[in-house]
Image (cartoon, rainbow, N blue to C red):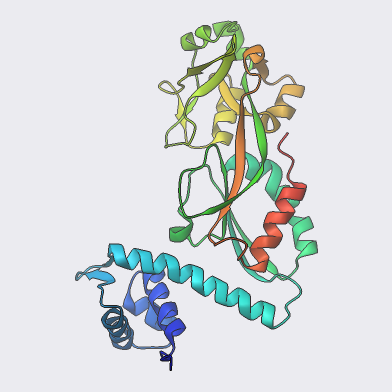
Length: 301
C-alpha cells in the first residue's frame, strides 16, 4: 500500500516562503509560527529528501543547487495545485493578483492603455505591472508574466509570441542640422548613436544591404537606461536612436523626429514574446486570461 506523507504541500509552502522572504523569521510571521518551528520543519524536509537545501550562515541563507531545483519545481507544483482547486470549485472568472513585467515601449504605449478594458473584462484580477527595459528573473521577482523583446534565451520558461515589431532609425531635425543626414550604413559610425547601459538581448543595429546583413554597434558617447529615455534624448537633439516604429510614430508624424536610412531597414524586426512559468497548458486562469487578451488586443505595428 502506498505511503501517504503528511502535509507535503504544506512543507513546500513554508520552504518557498523562506526562500522568497529571505529567512526563517520573516516566513514564520507569515504562517504565525516561531522561527524555531520553521527551522525544524526545513530540517525535517532536508532529512526526508536526504539533501541540504540551504547553506546557512549567521547573516543569510543561500540555496544549494539542489535547493534551487526543489524551489523551482515547488513553485510550479503549488501553482498547479491552486489552479486545480479553482477548477474544482468551478471558478468562472479568473481572480487573484497578477504580476506582470513589461518592457518600456510595449508597456507605456500598448499595455497600460488597455488596463481599463482588461479590468472591465476581469474585475477579480488585481494587476501589478512593472514597466522596465531590464530583464527580470520571474522566480526572483515573483512575476507571473514577462513581456520581452528579441530572441529568447534557453530556459524553462514557456513563451507565447505576441507579434513582430518593426524598428526604425530616427533623429531630431536639430541634430541633423548640426551633424548632417547619414546616407549609408557606414555613415552611421560618424554619428552619435544612443545606446543602453545594461545588457540587452539585441545590442547591435541590423540592416539589409544588397541582401546581406550589416550591423552597427551603438553606445559610447550616450548610453541610457531605457527606451523612453533614449527617445527623450533623441527628441532633444542628442543623437540618433533605434526604437520601435509604434514608439516614435507620433513624433515622426509631428516632424519632431525624422526616419533615417529606412531603405536599408527592410525585413529587420524584433519578436515580442510573453514568457511565464509553467508546463504545457497548465497555468492559472488569470495568467491565461491576460495572455489571450494581449494576443488579441496588443498591436505592435
